[in-house]
Amino acid sequence: MRRPLSPALVLALVAALTVSPSTVAADTDIGRSVLPEGDGWASAGGGTTGGAAATAANVFRVSTPAEFRTAIAGDQPKIVYVDGSIDANTDSDGTPLTCDDYAVDGYSLEAYLAAYDPEVWGREDPSGPLEEARQASQDVQAERIRYRVGSNTTIVGVDDRSEITGMNLLVHNASNVILRNLTFSDTHDCFPGWDPGDGGTGNWNSEYDHVEVSGSRNVWVDHNTFDDGERPGAEQPEYFGRKYEVHDGLLDIVRAADLVTVSWNHFAERDKALLLGNSDGRTTDRGYLRVTWHHNHFDGLGQRAPRVRFGQVHVYNNLYTVSGDLYQYSLGAGVESQLYVENNLFDLRDGHAPGALLYNWGGTDVTGVGNAFMTGGGGRVAALDLVAEHNAARPDRPLGEEVTWVPQYTTGVQPVHALRGLERKVGAGLL
Image 1: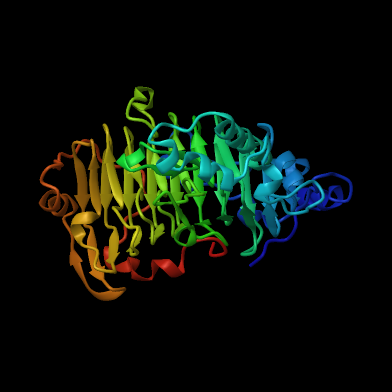
Image 2: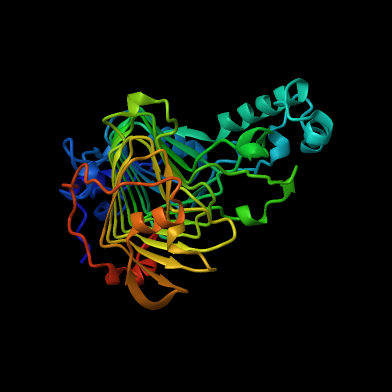
């Protein structure tokens, strides 16, 4: 039953007539919700409340990029309700911007391809005026699409139409942030760079995650959808024999970020999806990157679901739909990672085998408890020993099973058979 408006909410409705971006009383059952006690790592360290303590003057309803940028700034407690679709690639009057609008100093993709074709340029890194023009153009786009979230903030969609598209949302050196009930879509880089040495044969590399959590603590990411929108990676062309990759990560948690819970989200159709720790040499991440992933649907991801360095990471009660030609692995055990993988269900499709689900990127041990798999979207659910399957498939990169820590923060781990219907319960609009 919906609660009656409090006096504070009535004041907020009055203030909406005069304050920009508009301050309103949206559904406080969502906006003032806090992370439940014991719900993953973000419940430690005092818990995560976001903007629940916001005064009426700091409750905003926004529908344009300018309103959104203003509302999320600063460290005062605040609730930001996203109403409709906010497209970061628009100018101040709402006119859509294309990649051509960001290009400067004579940059064009056609000229770049002609100049740095390995048959012409060779295998050296691109340099010179066109590479400088690419970087300058990238900087122009970055200024438009990068948004920084202040501490003590809740950002929440008002309904299932609430979408943030084309935006690189940075939770950078902040604390106590909640992101809920939003679709994050198509954060694309207009100016990917060619690296001829990446992977031995070269790769296109792009900037801009949908959401990057860096140097921040106590962050809750819940009931959101992350996808490629109208620019699916599978439909991108190939140049120099490699996919022209215009997307980076869906959600990256890096640079000593800590105490994060990622729950009930739908992550869809991305190659390099979810990264925890971005460098083997960043030893300052030791003791940080403590993250819980639970009740997410990892749907058609190519790799990094997630890939982990350094952190104590609890991955439990997630559904993995393993499919597609780009699939490489799901869980990546990197340097000094401490993965505790519990009661997840892996739906193996398109001929993918259990031995591909885990990959050793320099890790030592992975704890796997109660995981299971099925094939083709249904059928019998069978027990899965992740480490044994990996070691059988990749005896050159063995992993141990020493239990280096035991998760303390959970509101309850479900039996794995209960996850078969999880895809109908996750993502934006399903709070």
